[in-house]
Image 1 (cartoon, rainbow, N blue to C red):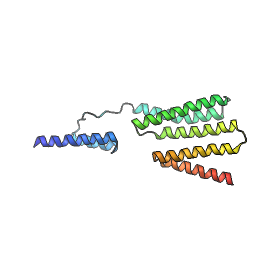
Image 2 (tube, rainbow, N blue to C red):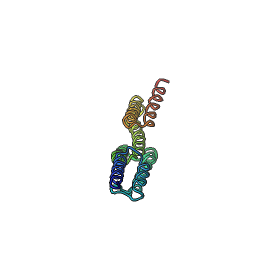
Image 3 (tube, helix red, strand yellow):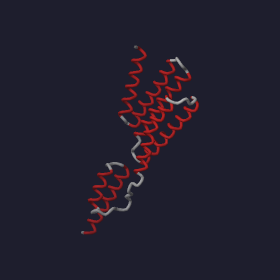
Image 4 (cartoon, one colour):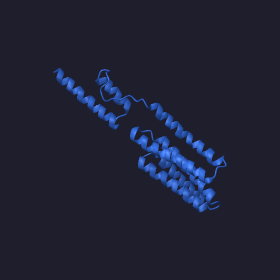
Amino acid sequence: MLWLEENRKKIIVNELLHWKKSRMLPDHYCDYLLALYTEGSQPKGIKKRKNTVVLYLANLILLLLIPISALLIYFTELSITLQTVILILFISSDIFFIFYFSKKVKMIHIPIISGGLILLMGSVDIVSVLYPGNERILYVSLVINCVLWLFSGLKWKFLYLWISGALGFLLLVISIFI
């Protein structure tokens, strides 16, 4: 009878490990249930997160890219080519961290927000420098940004992106026709 009880616990622990790995339940629920069924001993297959500090530092750096981009665009005398190259590097780092975080951890919100805002600031700056006084190209650039936000919100099912894209598009239509 003891063998049957141990076998049942092993099956439950393996199932909880699978749920934790596939993120069917939040980590803290799985940790609690694993501690309950293993009576406090940690089963094989559970890795403690050692790199959470690195993830938080990466998110902090990505958040700092937003004001750095604003300073770079609006308060420096750099050429448009150099500004564009630096902004492309910033957006590329955001895209890298979006893919990195989506595979490792579900922390892709900050890279998405940072990349979207930097892309918006950069596209508006580039269009206003290359085509001064041409409002049509500026509107096209803003529509493209709003459409990207809408599709990203639908793809990742992030309500804040969808709302931002819809409100931006609505405000753009209102500003064009008023």
